[in-house]
Length: 247
Image (cartoon, rainbow, N blue to C red; front, side, top):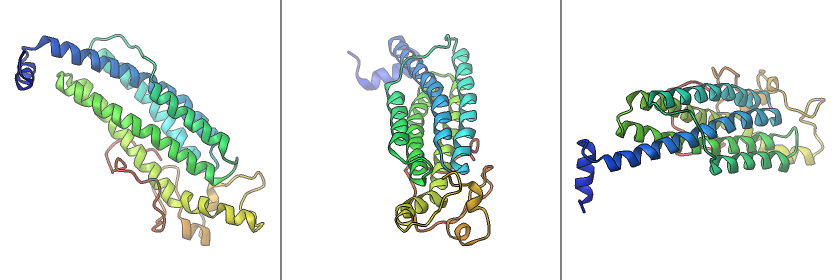
């Protein structure tokens, strides 16, 4: 039996058809799982938007939902670029993450920023799964010589990383501090809600002390408030990357 080094050398020299066939099968299997996950994410993002409290979080989910529809279409182009029929397969990971997001809704109070904080956490869990999946797919596509597929998958990977970063910025702008103080405000009897019990995005966009303290987030992502006292949901994968802007 050839050593591992010889197997790797043979693969890259084109003399190891068995390994190539195995990686090809793995790559297609991964694409099918990602395709399923993205289609599930489209529906989940709509549900998360409907459950959101603030306009900022709602708009973030809705805009990423539209971006995700484009990612679904791009995956179909990836399948075609490698000459494989578009198909999917069940991904237990995304099913579990979507269930977690639905549990956040059921376990938090409607109209609270605690719910928005939970939805951002749930959203970032989904993004981290997708970042791992797309990262692996880019590597496999590159090794197999599918340059067009690798380029398209990298584009989506950049978008997912950017989405994760934007969610962190959104949490840090005002969600974390407001959610932390929510219970105190409620116990003191002060009302921080509008007539429908919902926060309004304009509540944070003015020139008053609330806006100055917590910052504001424009739906188009052109401005974020500075907040140095909260940590947000900052993860190792929330680095700044190129790609479409979530908000």
